[in-house]
Each structure stands twice: as C-alpha cells, then as structure tokens.
Length: 333
Image (cartoon, rainbow, N blue to C red; front, top):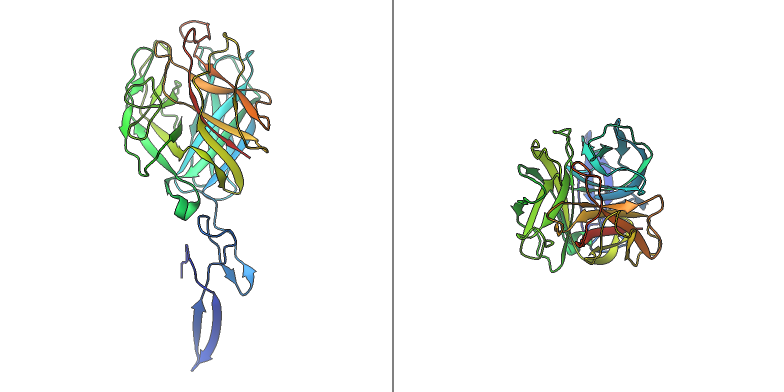
C-alpha cells in the first residue's frame, strides 16, 4: 500500500492469522499538531512517522567560483525542483551572475559567471539559494499561496530590446512577487532572469506576467534556449518549511555600484539568514541589470544590503545613472 497523504484518519493495525492466512485491518488518523495548512504526517501505534519531505529549502553556499561547479545537496527529495540563486560579493569583484545546472530531486550544481568578458578565476563567492518543488500551493493545503514553474525560454532580451514570454497564473494573486533563475547551462555564455508585465519597465501585476532571460549590454545577443524556473508568491509574511519568511516587492530605490551603494530594504524577520532576489521589471532598459547582495554579511535582523549589477561587456561603468530599480525579494529565518 502506497500512502502518500492521509487526512483526518486514525491508524490502528490489527493482524490475525485465520486459516493460515494473515488478515490485517488498518485505520488511521492525521494527528498533525500544526493543523490545517501544513504538510501532514501520521502517528502509528503512538509513534510519529517521519514528516513528509518539505517542499521548500533554502541556504547559503560558500566558496563558489567560476572555474568549476559546486554541488548543493537537498535535505529531502524535491519534485522537478525550481532553484533560484543570488550571489553576495563586494564592489572589488567584477560583475557576476549565478548559473545553475543539473537540478534533480536530490541536488543542483552552481557556479558564478563573469559578465565582463574575462575568464580570470574568481573564487570564494557566497550564494544564497532557494529550492521549491514544482506545483501550485494554496493556503488551505500548504499554509502559503505560491506556484513554482519551469518554462523553456526561447527569446533572449538585451539592452534596448525587451520581449519576455507571457505566462498565466495558476493561483489568483492580489500582490504577486516573482522570483526566478536561468536553470540550465545549454549556452556557456551568461544570461540572467527577469520578470515584468507587458511593459518591461514595470513589475508583474495581478493580471500580467512575462518572464525571460536577458544579456544586458553584451554585443553578442544570441543565446541557446534555456529552462527558466520561477516562483510566484503572494506578498506578505508567515511561516513555511519550518521557518519565518517575508516576501515583497521593494521600492524603486536601487541603483548601481558606481552610484552610492549599498542600498537597503528593511524586513521583519528577526532571525533572518537568507535572502533571494530577482529583477522586477527593467527600468534601466538601455543597459539592463540584476540584483545582487552586498557581502560578506548582507543580512541583519532588520534589513539587507543589495545593489543593481550591470554587466561590463561593452564598458566598465556600473552605474544606473538616473534610473532606479525595484527588486523582488524573499527573506528567510
């Protein structure tokens, strides 16, 4: 018998031998002390069975470089996982973005790629990561409203030319917050995730969602198709996966390294450890950018430091000039 999820049942197992045959009777109950809206587990003969694997995990991977791949292993298996990774580094580093490949039920591989045309080795980068099993989540069943999706990105945007792919929400949202990642390495040339409404300068709203990958000011705008993973959350606070979280769309306050960094967003997660970021519209349409954390200790109990990162493929400057960006984020305990 394969029991995957049982709600509101009491488990009692009686085994009798009748005429040389084993006769078994099973009744069961959900004794989940957390109540509705969390993953249930069974108690059998007064002993708790293992908790069902959480659908979400997060962490910080140190020592990531651009010369090889670092394997990150999950604590419990995931179903067709969506992985999002945000690098944390200082102004002394070149422009970097995270790359993901081989996201499986048990692990994924991560590296950072330089976006300045150089192959010189970079090491020791911290990467904040989040993984969620693909699926649609509701407050009634899981205690959180969100959806995790994989989609093939067949269009590549670049400075001055923005064209994402329209997506349809599975849930209904009032204030959607979209986080995402280029999750494959079909092209060794870098690209980064962004999300918007039909106007690429604006973040996704409750009606319109466009997702895509972009290459900023790179003169080479041709890229292979890549799998994009994205997660849509309803903005707010709560607990999920055993910890507190806050997810929001930050204010349009973020500029670049050559402006006046770091910039900060405040939060209410007192034991905050991990922050995941994504572009929410591209206001800087003439150049393109993406958010990174300002290391080595970007997260405090009240806020976190971030900056808008431009590539340096065409020129060395890293300022957003008069443009400011709004970034999407989730903070975890």
